[in-house]
Amino acid sequence: MDDFLTILFAAVLVEGLVNMIRNIKEKETDWRYWASLVAAIGVSILVSYNWDLDLFSAVLGEGQLPLVGAILTGLLVARGSNYVSELLKLLGATTHRIKNGV
Image (cartoon, rainbow, N blue to C red):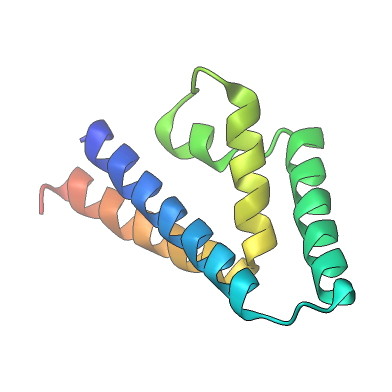
């Protein structure tokens, strides 16, 4: 079941990143938009790295490259709290189903 959670988690992450990139391409080309986007991503990754925030290690266990987990967690944080909240609900429901054998 850990493999299933890993695949599910990766699929949700990739979907989120693809949507983030798609939104970037469709949004304004104003430099202020780009500056705020880069700042949000940079600050989120810095905060995740500085405080060892690694959602992937928390859910899936320690990875081979711990820095990657912090960076990806930072990208999720930059994506927005609503997205992270929905992801945690999905993972919680999936974990509950696995533990209960549903």
